Length: 109
Image (cartoon, rainbow, N blue to C red; front, top):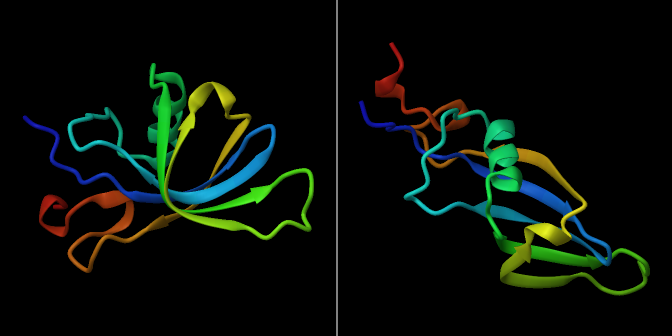
């Protein structure tokens, strides 16, 4: 049976050597995950052979000098090798038809 769950939209904060980057993680639709748990998905993204992580609606802050204003970027591609820490901040709902972790109501018995 084909995996039908919709990936959750996850807001994350990524820490690199120079920056804090906060945004919504984008995962290609053709990627299949064994689990729909957001923590498992993030683990697979970091350890599954991906070279880049894409975030949309990003806010980038300088890690060493907080006096700099945050920069808002519509989309950022971050090299996985430069990531020191990725924190899941929250799981965002897609719409009213879906429930926790992206399962559709009609899939739940």
